Length: 224
Image (cartoon, rainbow, N blue to C red; front, top):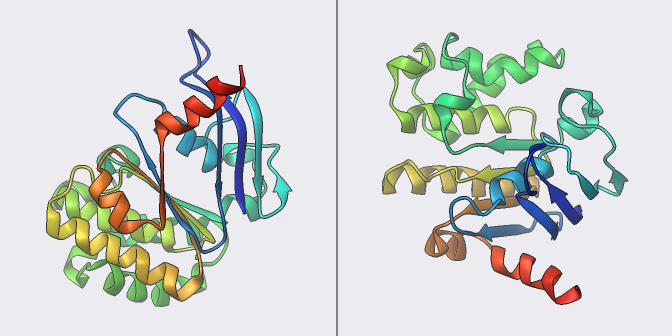
């Protein structure tokens, strides 16, 4: 279970951007988080991905409370979560080839021997041809780079996947291909999914249930 309870989070100055949010994702479940731009849903997603420490509240991952964040989180917790962000050019190092970009988590965790097989498997699943794997980010389209970012998120076989506006900048065909790749992965592994977005049609079709941001804030407001 991925559990976020009573999360308040911000960036040090001013009012928190997330206040008192509670959200759970069960193993194998797909949950959509729907809300307008700027409401705080991406911050909550970063908390769920162990990339942003909340001001208050608790995160529990597979029954274990999370006490450390980012690179200080235990490896077992860090590698249990794969995350894909909205803007691939801001989340991908522009220097390496796509093949190296995808393989980087395996190198970082001492699993170099797995690289050839995982590259072959993931290139097929996300729709990257061998020639694209040899190119650098500036030599491919946004859609092709986002395919590589999805492959990177899946390379360690995470039990949880967080897609934060993953398809917001993509055309319909690429969106469909990436959603299909995620669902194929989930069908094969039983991974849970938190999909964050503002497109209610996409989330309603993609996810088993969709939580509206207003529901999170309204529930907290009703307690006061």
